Image 1 (spheres, rainbow, N blue to C red):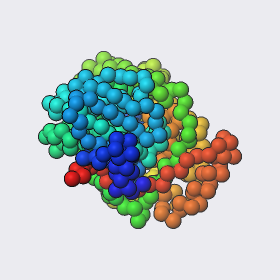
Image 2 (cartoon, rainbow, N blue to C red):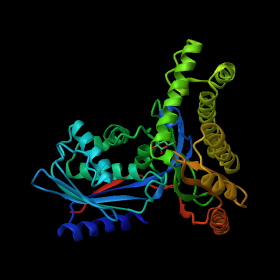
Image 3 (cartoon, protein in one colour):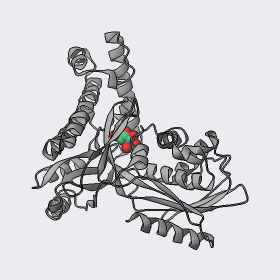
Image 4 (tube, rainbow, N blue to C red):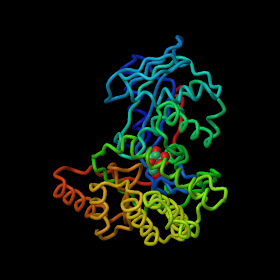
Length: 395
Ligand code: GLA
């Protein structure tokens, strides 16, 4: 949905629920990871883009130190003391908002009472970062009601929202999602070095390349935290192993070169070796992909996406048959540059980069192929690289 329409929907939802006009709103997009799967928490490289779908929060301050938040299409109103937000099983989705409130207070923002309505056109749990969009839109909204200089420090705000997810919600994710949602630029992909936090925008013009996100609609058990947590632990164990073996200061797989991997890899535990192999080469693929994109070579760029998918499927083992099928169908279609899994894995979405004119045929092939194989529909979300988060006051 168009950004202004989403904000307007949040405004209306607020008016209906609370019977007054909102004072402020925040809006933030979802994201699609183009290259750099699971590299972020290994202090490596990612190439990402914000998408033209997202979440909007509209609301107003209250005089009493009490917060009430509801989300269209979800059960329950979250009622809490903004100075002391706590988990509540009746509205678990609100943990993302509460985590942000908690972190803003820690940063010195002194969040007081407020009412808020949340609307979103992002599928939940599909791997397009509905959680980061909620965190970031809530932060934008709250900082407009209760101003604090962190609103101007975009990287600081991305990290604050990441802490909300890591420490309050308890998901050990990297910085990819929050960074993408805040820094998104229309017509551009974003390269981020997750160690130095240096970033730059790389043109991804909509006239030449469109993004199709194909949602499998499945979420395997491993997706809800277990697999992600395990992969992260394996990557950390692999980095420690390389450090011990080489005597070099290796704090993350980012520090392992291709040469070190080839030299020491054969002596390594085979599972850890596969995980390390994926990360070491995935970082190289991000660098090569950025190079290709900078030169406008979409064919070479698409090839990187295809290679990444293969590596996720065979080495990192975080794909799923449903994602593999969508990727394979897409790769066989004319006008497709490349396709891969996107996000944490074990279900969720495939991302396909294609020529603008290829959308109709591609969509048909995906819809038919997926239905024939799995007996249900894939949800197709055509998108383009879009603008990042914003905040506004209604008065
Ligand atoms: C999830 C996490 C991100 C990142 C990706 C995989 O989306 O939230 O931090 O690790 O998986 O690249």
